Length: 213
Image 1 (cartoon, rainbow, N blue to C red):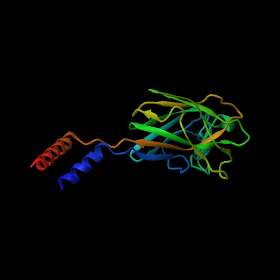
Image 2 (cartoon, helix red, strand yellow):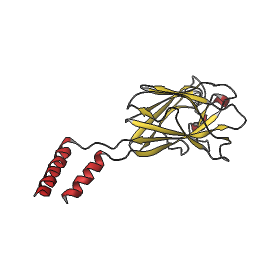
Image 3 (tube, rainbow, N blue to C red):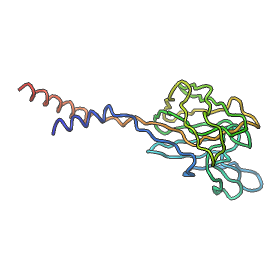
Image 4 (cartoon, one colour):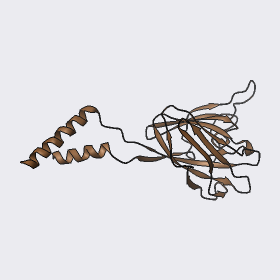
């Protein structure tokens, strides 16, 4: 029994990262903010959050519009399928920020470049992160072609809780357009509290003592 508890505790200490994805096609957004005008209807969405596995990701526009996740007029979601239009073409966003509520590792991005348009090339910059020259491996049409999943240049990105990271298209323009559908991330297991560590140490000592006898 003690061996079982000890093994379980050690597994918690050195367990694998928990992988998950931010799905930007499900429309499950919260904390939505809109561009406002002096007169007329509500504007497009300029910021939103999505919570996955107890991690809240907050995304905010710097330039362009979140047309794929926003709506004009009454503020309702009327876009299908949802996605994050990226590149600058067609009013899409050309730069935005991302912030996570916990330390996470951003592993992959999924999406595609719009067929017959200029494929976006983008950088991710923030504290201890400089991923330059990321590009989609797939070109196609959203809704009829499957998106691809790609790693970030120079490997996974370690994001600090509460820090702001900027995604910006280096070749933004009217003809540049792509779509981000998912961001793959992983979270380290929550470490055991000190009391649990002491208990495990005691169990380990008892196990060694019994073996010596």
